[in-house]
Length: 208
Image (cartoon, rainbow, N blue to C red):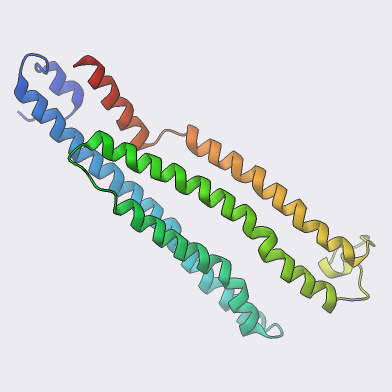
């Protein structure tokens, strides 16, 4: 009868029967590939969401019929388009990692690559905020001359001069940094298939 888990294989004489070593290695090989495939599918969904965002932002500008709607639709879609292209590249890099006939080293390589991607995306995301906001706020500043900050944003009682709009750049950048750090730490603490499987392999290696 075919074993269905590491524990079952172990109970059936892993230490005494060398043939069980092949079975457990095969089990780990199959499970490793399945875990990475699941990770790639999840990553791909996030990447494709950016493509949906591109279409949504562009269509929204056309629907609102703003001045230069097509131009602002294209400009507004650029960030999501950038993240879509970057995500596709990163997904390809994950899939290109060689298996090397060793599921443990394979998982460690994928895990290391995911950490690099997360940290890179965090830094890029934070840097992109002032890069995107600065031209938009400059455009707003010069096209809304004579209005208060409250009038521009539709907030009654906010009589600050329009120059205060540039405070949004450092404010949102710092906020994005701390929010991203919290999300990154939460993701690193949250158990996932790769981390769990790597720990199982390390435990088995110590018992051999």
